[in-house]
Image (cartoon, rainbow, N blue to C red; front, side, top):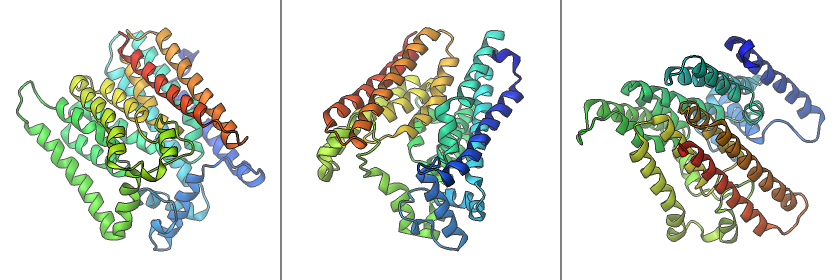
Length: 381
């Protein structure tokens, strides 16, 4: 089916689909009680309007992001959905990069080309990806920054790695987990730190610190509090797929104690360190494993977090021909069943008012199992 489509046509169809949904969002938001546009997009655009007036974006309650995002969305002040088009553009570039990475780092001639095309189609026409960006979520920018860091790492270009790492971690702190494998990948078999590693570390630190210092100079403590500090102590009892959901719910006032915080952080830190040391020689697989583990073991994660690992898992599976379609199908089925189970129980809780907290806790644990199955598929061979 895909063989008859050129890459350009696939990109055009993917963009056209997203454009139609953006147009539809304008209609649904105006005439229907349930809006298509994500509430986060309203927060982004409100913050951008504050910037247009010369005010701080943090004067908009619940804006918990870098001021750069509000600056990027200032064209929305005219009423034009520029932000959604920006997020869709990031989707398109991510699709192109995924195809490029899949072709450059695998062998197999026609078979490799076919796998690369299917990966591109997986991203372009994935309903989760399409809906998230057209509803106005900025996660597509996060994905793009991660792919840029991966591209730079595979090229072993310390300057580009440092710039992409600095931007990615400024925008969203979680890409800091890629620091160790990227650093180790630039090394040699010797235990000493080499010039390329120092170059990467210095450039990354300068970019991250420079952007942070500039934002702090403009917005003071509000920047640090809302962009970074808030997320360390975040407690989210709704739309949280995490296996820690019920513990957070029952023990909300004290869950941030040292004991509870350490108990939640320890398995995450162990898996991240092991992955970096064990898998850094294959950055694509390492990044994929680290991201899946980071999401699965986090205290809080929502459906938007899935976008962080979807392209990396797809790319890692594509670059490993020994990963069979059968195993991929099993993992996808388990993941979809677990998510469907969780969503069904969450509906009973939020919309029917039933006391199903224990069942929802079990559903959250099933999501952890689904992520373990995804990791098993990557390591199956």
